[in-house]
Image 1 (cartoon, rainbow, N blue to C red):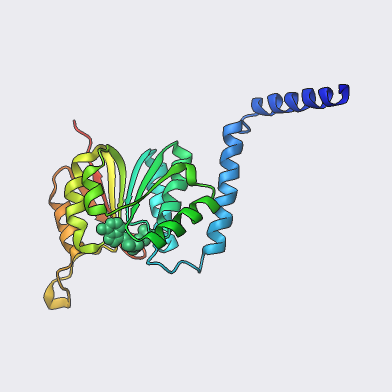
Image 2: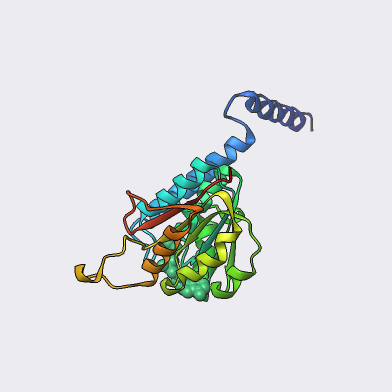
Length: 226
Ligand SMILES: C[S@@+](CC[C@H](N)C(=O)[O-])C[C@H]1O[C@@H](n2cnc3c(N)ncnc32)[C@H](O)[C@@H]1O
């Protein structure tokens, strides 16, 4: 009994001492555990994403935008099996935020849940099995980060519903968007072209295509009111 008491006291002292070392708080330790799990999962999955998932380079861009701007309230439209959601939620694990992500296909939704668990990120993700056409209108927001990556011909409708729910200083992103090419240069008018033109037409936003994106990440920052 005495022996167990001494071990308990020593363990308590070790924890108390460790918590006084800068960067070694319990919070810091939890972050290190999450980082380890996410990296291991992403390494394992590197060449295995098969469900229209974003390339790694584009996931990293979403991660950077969230961490740099300390965003906390994120929404993703189009989870698939969760690659982009993992990058977003990993960033939110650093900022203390949470992601709502929407997927209509039950098989992909279930696989995403399993992936979030294996990556150690479930507590940062509220995954919804739903039709985003409806749910995006119902979610109250506000959001400070949005990633649209679902049915391309609905992008502008998603944007119209979400622009008022985005906080000033917030960021709306969308995937597979590029500078529209005129018809004489082989271009045709697509849902993502329409989205890009719509976002660029809004004076309250600064919109561009991220220069490092592999598959076209459109980035629109909502200006802060003066
Ligand atoms: C390009 S994939 C998303 C990839 C994901 N962002 C990733 O990187 O892992 C598009 C997904 O949007 C989903 N989707 C399409 N229409 C939808 C809708 N109306 N509501 C919710 N999800 C939808 C599709 O089932 C598909 O899984």
